[in-house]
Length: 410
Ligand SMILES: [Mg+2]
Image (cartoon, rainbow, N blue to C red):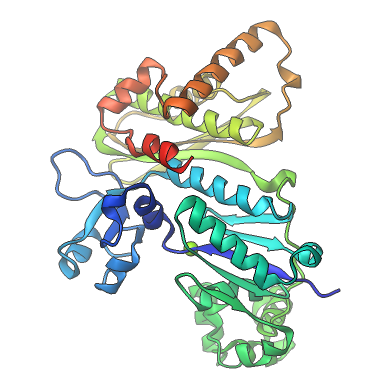
C-alpha cells in the first residue's frame, strides 16, 4: 500500500527558539554558541546555529566566533541552553502527537510522521502539513519546513528543498525528475566520506547511484551496496516508528564545557550533581528509569575518557545518579589534570510506572523529588535545588534563560 510520510524540520532551530523567547532578539542577526565566561570576550566553542538575519549577512554554520564577528560585526551572541531546546522540542512533539501516534523523533528539531491512516479525516497531506505549520507558528512562534512523500528518504529530501517555512510534496510521478540531477550528498545517510568514495567511482547524482551496477556497489561497499542502489532509486521501506516504541529514548544525558578549566574538586562535584539533577528531571519527564550510568571527563589537554557502571537496580533521581557517577569518578578517573568538560548519562532504560518503587523509604525520596519537580515546573527550573547546584551556579555554569522559556512558551 502507498504510504504518505511527512518530515518536519524546524528552521534555524536553536536561534529561532531564542528569538521566540526574547522579543529583543527578533529580526536581528544572532548566533547561538557555548557559554561565555565572565571577563572573556568570546565563548570557547563554535557557533551552533545562526538566525536567518545573520545568514543573510554571511554568517555560516560552523564558523568560529571571531570569523563570524569579522563578517558580521553586529552579530549578537547568545549562550545556548540545551534544556530549553529539549523543552520546546517536547512541545513540538506534543502538537504532532495530537494528529497521530506514528511520530518518530529523528533529532532534536526533526520528526517523521506517517499520516497514511489519518488522511481520510483531513482531506489530504498538504492540509495536515499546513495545519501543523500553523499550530507550531501560533503556539510556539517557530517556523518549520515540511516534506511530503511516499517514504522517509524522499520526505526528508522534500523538507530540505525550501527553507525557511517550506512545504514541498514529492509525488510518485515526480521521483525520476527529482533524482535526475540530485547530488548524492543530498540523500540522507550519505555523509562526506561516502560521498567521496562514490564520487571516485564516478557516481555524482542520485540517478547515477540508482543506475550503478549492483556488482560494482557490493564489491566496493559489501551488503550496504544494495541499500545504496535503492537510495539512488528513491526507494526506502523503513517504517516510521511509533512514538511510544520502547527504543524511542535509549539514553538520557547532559554534558557541559566548564566556563573555565578547574582543579577544584568541589566545583567538579557541584557540577556533576547539577548534571545528574538535569538527567534525573529529564528521565522522569520521559517516565523512564535506568540502570547504567556513564561519566565522561574531558581534561584541559582535550584528552577525553568515558567510563560506565551498571547497577543492580533501576534508578531515576538526581541523587541516585550522582552517587553512581561520583563513585565512577573516584574509582576510574585521575585528577592529575584540570577538568574542562563533564558529561553524565544514563542508559539501559525501562518505562517506569512506579511499580518498582513500592518500598516506603524510596517512596519518601520520590515524594520529595516530585514536589521539587512541581515547584520547579511552576516557578522555573532550579527554584528549589540542592546546595551544590548553587555552587555550580556561582561558578557560572547554569544559565538563566531556561526559566524564561518555560514561562513564555507555556
Ligand atoms: Mg532543522
